Length: 217
Length: 217
DNA sequence: ATTTTTTTTTAGACAAGACTAAACTATATT
DNA sequence: AATATAGTTTAGTCTTGTCTAAAAAAAAAT
Image 1: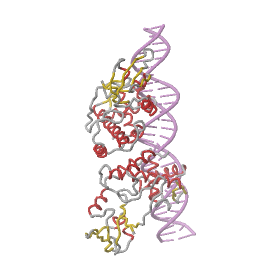
Image 2: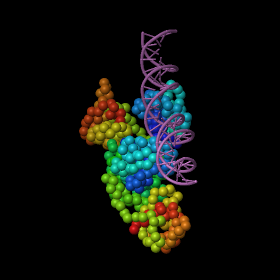
Image 3: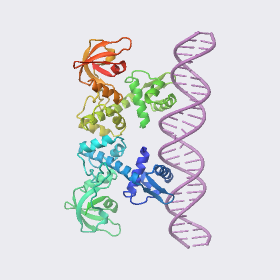
Image 4: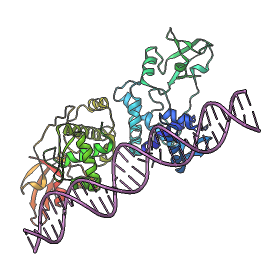
C-alpha cells in the first residue's frame, strides 16, 4: 500500500516519463513536485525498494510495469472524479482539478467501479483526456500539441492538458474548448507564438499556451 | 486548518462528549481512537492550543464553540457522503461507513454545497441520523436508545448508531431498519437483553445491540 | 491517615517526509 | 588533462504523530 506522498510522486514520475517510456531525472521530479532534489532522492529510494520504479544513481528513474499499473489506476480515479464533478455536480471543467487531486487518493476499488457505472463508463474526462479502464487499458487517440503543427492545419481540439485554473479560464475565454474546430493560421519563428482561428475568431497565443492544446490529427 | 489526525480526534471527542455537553477523559479518547493515552495527551495539547477544546490537566477536555462547529461540519460531510453512496451509487447502508470516513476529509466547501444540492438537501443519512445544515444546525428528533425504554413500548426505528459492518448486517437480517415499527416485548433484568417484535417477528437481542437502536418517542 | 491502585502526564525514542549544507559525480570548458 | 559547473546524493536536523517506560496526581481501599 502506497502512502499519499508516494502516490503523488509516482503519478508525477509517470507523467514526466510520458507514460513510462523514458527515464526521468531527479531535478525534473523536484520541480514538478515543488520540493528539493534531496527530498526526491529519499522518495526515489522508497519507491524503488517497493519495485514501482527502477533507480540508477546519477542517471535517473524508470517506471516498472507495476508502477505503470499503479499510476494508471490513480489517473483513472482522478479522471472519473473530474467527470463526476462536471457532469453530476455542475462544476465547470476549470474548477475540478484541485478537488480531484484529493479524491483520487480515496481507497476503495468498489467505489471506483460504482462511480464508473454511475457515469456510464465514460471514455474521456471533461478536458478530453482518456480514462483508463479497470485493467489500465487506454483508448489512444491520434493527437498532437498545437505547437507541433504547421500553419494551415485544421483539426478538432481533443484535450487540454491539466494545468492551473488561470490557463483553463483563459482557454475558455478564447473558445479553445474540447470539441471545437481549430485552424492554425500562422506561426512566428522568433518566439513560436501562433495565430489560431476558432469559429471565425482569430487570437494570437504564446508557445506555452499552444503546448497545452491537443488537437486530433 | 486541521490535519487529518486532528480532525479524527476532534470528531471522536465531540461524539464522546455527546455533542459537546460533557467532559471527556483521556482514556476514553485513547480507547475510541485505538491509540495510547500518552498519544492522546499530545494531541489534546495541540487541539487545545488551536482553541478547539478546553483542557484541564487530570480532569478532561471540553469542546469549545469553535470545536463544535468544526465537528458538525465533519459530521455533515460524513453523512452527506453516506447518503450519496447509498442513494446514487447503490451501496447498501452497512457498506458506506469506511468510505465516508475517508471522504469526509476532502477540503472543499463548494464541493459539499454542490453535493447537498445534488442530493436535494437530505435531512437524514441512510442510518437515520440527522445531517447538520451548512450553518451546523441540526433538526433534533425525539429519540431514545432501545435499552432505555420499558417493555410494551412501540415506536419507529429512527436511526442506528454508526458501528461496524457486522452489526449493521445483523440488524438488517433481523429487520431492524430505520422506518420500521418496533415493539419492546420484554426485558431480562440480569443481562439487560430484550425481546423485540418487528413485523410480527420476535427476536432476542443483547444490551449492546439494543443500545445501538434509536427509536422515535 | 496512610497505602494501594488507577489514571494521566512527562520524557525520550522512532518513522515518515520534508529541509539545508556539504560532498560527490558527470559533463563541459579551456 | 585539469578545472569549472551543473546535477545528485549524503549527512544531519525538524515536525507530526505514534510508542514505551517512568513519574506524578487523583481516587479508592485499608
